[in-house]
Amino acid sequence: MADFTNHRELGPLDAARSRHNWARSAVAAADGRVVAGTADGRLVAFDSALDSVQWDATGDHRIVSMAATDDCLVVGERGGDGTLRAFDPETGTERWSYATTDDIGTATKDSLFFLPYVVDVAVTENRVVAAARRYERDGEKRVWSSVVLGFDHDGAVQWRFRAAASPIALDTDGDRVAVAYNRCPDPEQDGLVVLDAESGDSLTTWDPELDAERRVGDVAFAGDDIAVCCHGDKRGYLLDSDGRERWSVDLAVKEPIGDETVYAYPNHVCVADGVAVFVTGNTFAESTRDPDARHPQEHTAFAVEDGEILWTHDIGGFARGVEAVGERALIPSAQNFRRRSADTHGVHVFDAEEGHSETTALSGIPTALAVGDGLLAVVEEPVEYHDEEVTHGAYRLHSGTLE
Image 1 (cartoon, helix red, strand yellow):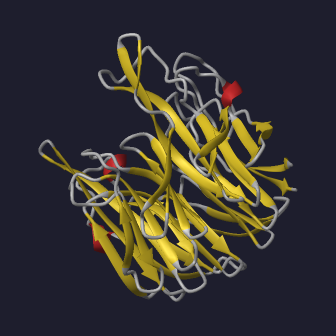
Image 2 (spheres, helix red, strand yellow; image 1 turned 90 degrees about the vertical axis):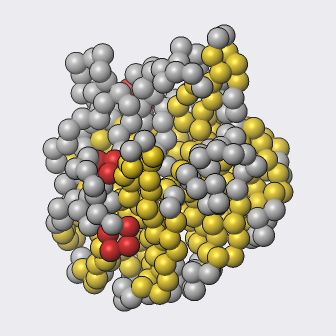
Image 3 (cartoon, rainbow, N blue to C red; image 1 turned 60 degrees about the vertical axis):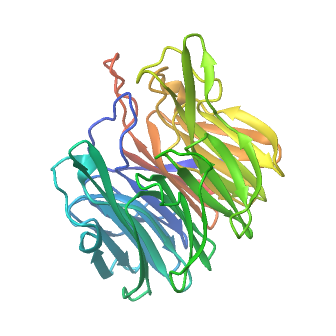
């Protein structure tokens, strides 16, 4: 059971609107501690009940990615130099920092989408891993510069993997690092790259069998295997350690409805007790940015085992991420920008084999979620739909137990 028993205000924040915002908060839970990273660059560590502030630190740019273990906290920023910072999680002392703009270059335009962005971070026994990207336009051409970096825990760079593509997520099993690239203008760039965590050497690559810039939306290790969300064909895959396909399933593939052909991207995957749980996002159409039709599998969780769909569940709105712990999958649901109802806001808990077990409703939108050591932590942000004059929720941190 997930139980939010505690909350803490995080200060003022402009309300999100009907369409989902870019990430502007992050959270981590480890060693009986909850750490929140905010849109104004503040980093605050609380005890598990959120009763007291253990330490805080300030920065100049929004904190958008975070990972923690008992002895290492790593945060990534969007804006400025796209800085990665490592802290002592007990005291808040900054151990080291690294400007990813040294690898990906600086912003060519003062616009959010153009800012350097530390997309995702992870901590292993010997490595801190980070994926960063930067976007620009060259006439009509879209250009991405990106790097995946492997550091030792003292902040020394041990390896780099560069690509002219847009990384969107990474996962690690300690020995390997899997990187998902969702935009690949270069047809030679693979959508999935698996690296050796120690050396950075490429171990495995995979790409969907189609000619498209859209490639992979998320990745998660499943023992030796690898679960992949494909943005290209809107399917879910399980690959073996050599990148060979074990199975694939339709998620929200293109479907004619009336005069429109619609689809939804599978944006997330996690693996709970050997079951791959995929999550789809908003409906899109081939011919228009604002389709009248809705794909029947938009905003849907799919649990798949051995290539068979065990269950599906409508999560109501857009999920920013997913987490797995033991046999459970946790999915936060934010705006459904077409339905525009606060009733869709909440955190869903699923049993991997049996399906939905409970939902905790929130007034605002859950935009960051973390689990660790039996703790569940969620950042809620306020939202104001464009056809209302009502602000739902506030900028808050919630914590509780996951029993």
